Length: 275
Ligand code: KIV
Image (cartoon, rainbow, N blue to C red):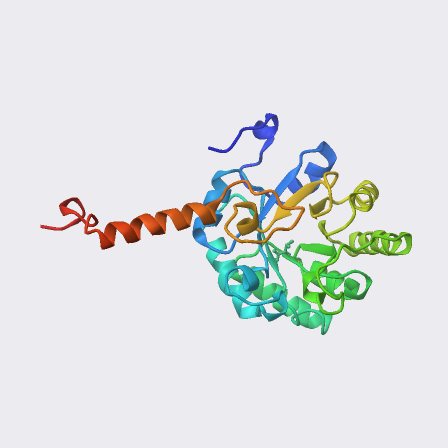
């Protein structure tokens, strides 16, 4: 059972863009999780999660790639459709895959529209100033855009690996400028990934749209985690991750018990058989 919070009565029956923006005004924290399939989507909807991110992290968490740069547009369409078919309440945000928007605003609009056709209600893309024409074009096409700054996984090679961004003054200023530029271009929220808490707090204070943190401290307007990290299914040990369950242990225990029952001929029994 999800833990109820005082804000439960204020929860919309369908999360829409305006509710995300209103949350910033009212101070209601936004909880976002990744989801790529019907079972997690339904469980997270039942738990009251406001935003589901069909992240390109599906490539690393589900498909076994080393980097999200290997996640394809077709992957994103398939997993976005699976989530969209399964839930009605949460706002569904889908990642634009690497290489589908950096090339031109026209490519960005075309791929964003295909994600919407698959069931996304908003799209997310990575980058600051360089992506402003793309953000403007997608927003003008009537598709809500979420920005993503700080450590941007699709630029893992350019950033020399998974590293906290914006540590020095100049880099922190650049991040803040990028966030403001994204807001002016029309994004409805900005993910801040692997950013010092003080920098994320400063950006959160300056922006009128919500910030969603991942490894960005407690002062963002919302938080997002990759669900397999949050639930202890992956073995990712990031310092910013809290494991709210130990699903890997539980799954291993269940599979071991199943194996023992099959090998010991105690499953199936007549109870599990047809006459
Ligand atoms: O793809 C993803 O899971 C993400 C989160 C890390 C924010 O973009």
